[in-house]
Length: 161
Image (cartoon, one colour):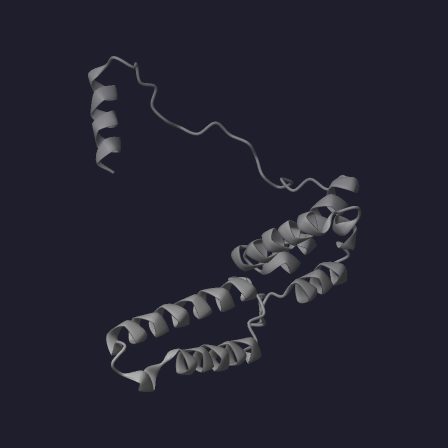
C-alpha cells in the first residue's frame, strides 16, 4: 500500500511538472528540464521519508491502530494462537484482517466474543441448561387461510410497514 501511494504521488508530481513545462513553453528556459528533475528528485526524497506504513481501516478497541502485531498479540493473549498454526503468510494476513474487522464490529470486541464462547462451551460440558426457569408455550395468534379476505388485509398492512 505504501509503495503504491508513493508511486501515485510521484506520478501526480510528474504530471504536474509536465503540465508546468507545457505551460512555460520553450521560450522560458528558467523552467527547464533540469529544474523539473530536481523538483521530482526532491519530492521523491520527501515522499520516501514519510512513514507510510499500511494501517487497516479498523481500529482495535482502546483506539490503537490495528496493526498485525498488535492483533496477533491480542489473539495470543486470548489463547487463540492456535488459529495461526500451518497458515501461509497470505492466509495469516487474511485471518488478521478478518479478526480486525470482527473486533471492531462485535459488541465488546474479540475479548467479549472469546469469553462468551468459552463460558458457553464450559456450561455445555457441565450440562448447564441456559433455558432453566423458562416454560415453553405456544403463543396465541391467528390462523389465516391464504385466500381469505382477512389474509389479504393483514398482507396489505404488512407491506405498508
